[in-house]
Length: 288
Length: 188
Image 1 (tube, one colour):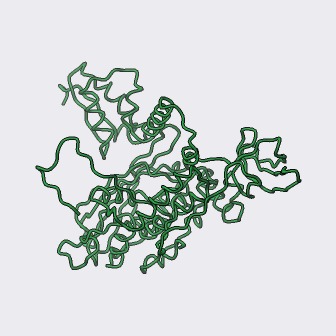
Image 2 (spheres, one colour; image 1 turned 90 degrees about the vertical axis):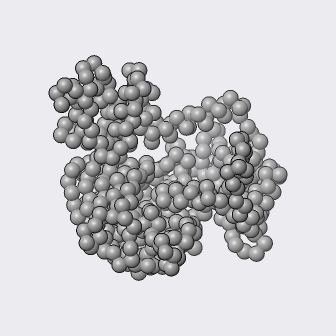
Image 3 (spheres, one colour; image 1 turned 90 degrees about the horizontal axis):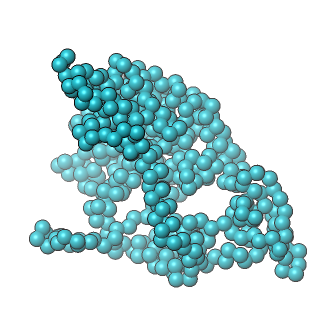
């Protein structure tokens, strides 16, 4: 590792990208070490079935993620052989413009075998017959192939379990258009890009939805009152501090109530804040 | 490798890996009584293998957390996590095992490193609960004490959990469905 001294750093310098790939095996190892066997971490199949998360996949443990991030900041050995192999395999898929679940699964499961990962190029999304169990789209609905039958003349009969209704129906293709359902990465790899403006809007809406979910301060932006900076500062301090036991004292007319409303807005409906004995107490300063 | 293939330590071998098993009895959001305090059901005796296992599990190669001969050897800062899962049993605070729980962010204060030989007890305080955008948050304040009564750490543990037993059981039944080999339907 090359050490950089203060005088060698210039404004605008950028570091090479650092990457670390998470496998289910790593998550499992961390779950055991943490004694946290919640299926939201260790059972991807259950996560998809229970619809716990948008995107229907399981999560790493918070501690693991925090630690990986800090380790990356402390420099990860980029010349690691497995990492090099991963990048090589991804480049192969990217160059050919084809990616289906089997290929992605292999990407998610790096092996330490000599020679790295062997790749099998998957079928095109519209090549028939599609395998039983495939996620497909028919008439705009998502479903899963239960059975397939070759009825001759290059036509195939499919039995498909529809996601929305839970019912199994049969179609013949052609004429019915049946294609594999593609995930976001598949769509990107097949070159079906949206306009930059649409991309920006989507990513911004996703960021805001996550911020509204987890960042208590964002709720202040939806407040019907324009808070002054000193009011925001007080609200920020109370909402993001443990414990939430605060005494707000100021002269009459200096917005103790506004701060109280901001705290309530930022905290959501809380037992603790709404409890008169252990919440926020407001007093005119002369009474203290 | 399966999950159980990673089990190394004595505590890991003696720990119930099936969070579904007692899900029907877990504490739920609507059952949390704010300001109530409870002692943990078990104590955690810190062993060298526990410290090393956690450092390896969290993928931290720092010698401070991995080399017992290092002058500053100590557990990883997040070592309080397995202690909590070990000490908190099926009663109060068992919501940390809720199927479907989501981690919205944690706050941990470390006052003194845990040491090999420490016997850790946790005092739990039902600290806060709230609803935001339809999600049910709960916070417990977990205070870690050693056998001498020294406060070692405080963890304000927050999770988004199922609001009531009915919802908890819905998640539990989903696991049973997956285990029953009907996962393909569940995937849709």
